[in-house]
Length: 98
Image (cartoon, rainbow, N blue to C red; front, side):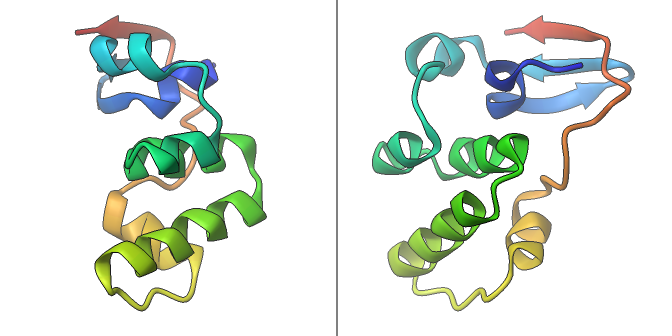
């Protein structure tokens, strides 16, 4: 199972391994979803909300995204499709940090 900090900064997958951005992870690993949003790290913030399984956090990211971009997303599903982040994969057994 992926740790939160690995999932939040994951940039892709290769087989059963998650590929993680080590620079971002080191700099921002301890930030909350709201703090990631404040830093402009929208993808990381959305991943954090998905990991936390918190619908309020998810919608906070969606609404903030809408405000910043002029988009008009109404559901978390739209944001999931946009970013390609749907859930924490259960079959990941390794982490590769770049």
